[in-house]
Image 1 (cartoon, rainbow, N blue to C red):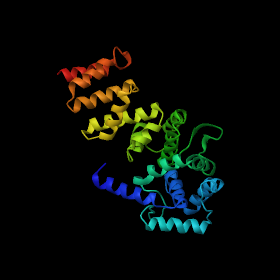
Image 2: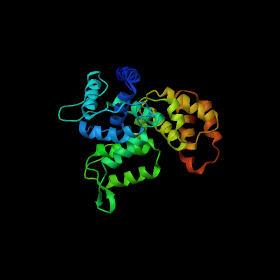
Image 3: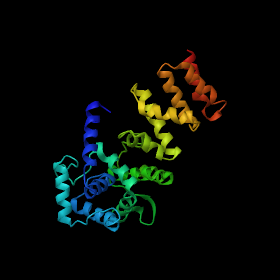
Image 4: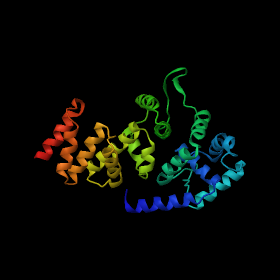
Length: 279
């Protein structure tokens, strides 16, 4: 992430932390919604998700006009944005900060459930067949929800649904996961994920850094911690060894690859890396 964007993100994160509980809940709803919706529909989603748990989270109920006033205030503060002819939305630099906070505070599931109830995705053949996503943004929203739920079956279904879409896809699942974990990268958050998602995300970040010759120091440091704890899966070991090699630590990289033994499933890439190092 460019230094300007990183500074912007830190400023947004600081502003978000200063918000009231009610205001945070508004941002969380728009963050999970992902695509811009009208204020009326956003209010419906907030009411469906937040009001049933309002007392538990010390959230004051809002009328629709009060909700709209709060949205306007957040836009004026630069925390939310609204383009001409669209509804309000959460900016990309804040979106995953808001969703992660929703997961931690327990509002994510009520919001995701409300979205499914209020904005159901129709199936192409009424009772069976793939779901019909009219826009990629809606599909991306559902993919993001499935990733945050770490629901592999739902992700597979969404990828199958996408094959029947009328629009051309511009995002893959690996890209989505990598972007979400890097927005911003938070080692504590990654460690809360299952090894399947956390280590896959780390591998994707490290491989992308190698491809573009860019730094991924925080992801590398966490990978090193996981490896030293003997918890790294083979694919992550390969990405870790590649990073060690690129950093000039040849003997350490060779040690990681040698320690993998005769793992036939990953032998081709392992041998390719060993060959490159020998060269």
